[in-house]
Length: 154
Image (cartoon, rainbow, N blue to C red; front, side, top):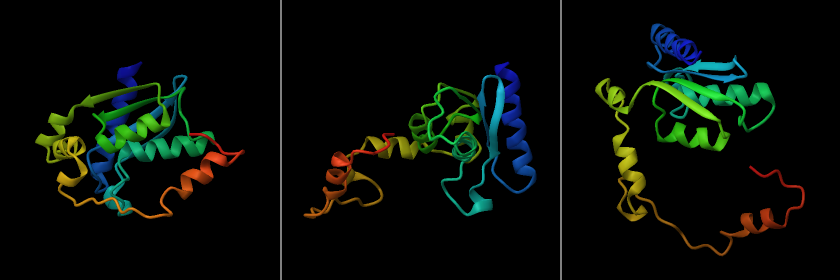
């Protein structure tokens, strides 16, 4: 069963190449049924966050009317990058199955190793300068959140 869903994610990746997109595809499955799937939409949507996994998660959440997919699995043509991995954890997917790994992706020109390295560095040592600014109002959103009685936790 897993191989069949993974082959469908790979097919989405191949179809995506044919229409000018990147070589990535992902599907979200619940109870043996595909509820959403997509190829990489980065260039088509001019959106650097529109990786196949992210788009599939967004579509699945919209279809389900929920921001959590704890009873779903994700099948991806390639090991999820750090951004997609974050989305997978935030969506609380129950499992992820992938075909190629990050080494295969790097050989094809999609090398995310620098991001893994950057994440481990102190903010002051990262390639893109990052500086925390001390503002009196900085904590106000968190204070308002903490006292809000009808908040939806995520």
